[in-house]
Image (cartoon, rainbow, N blue to C red; front, side, top):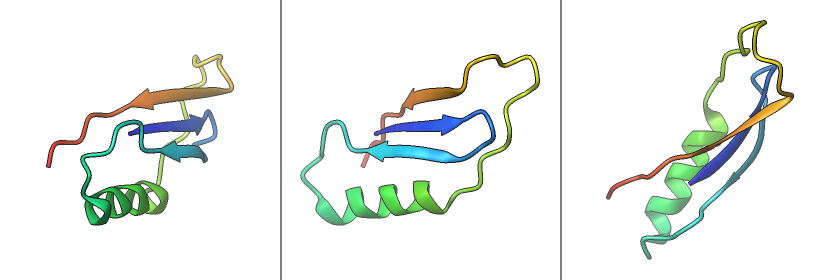
Amino acid sequence: MELTISKNGDLLNVKIIKSSGNVRFAKAAQRATQLANYPRAPSSFTQEKKTFKIKLIL
């Protein structure tokens, strides 16, 4: 899974990079990511956004 978060803590993008083939798991992971609250980045963070790649294991 890949997600991009703005320095304000807004979720900008979420996508499945490589599917396990389990559609229900993928949808649940994507939905949980969309419902999560993300904190603002520290003031020392100078980028407008950050992209994270997360490996989920079923």
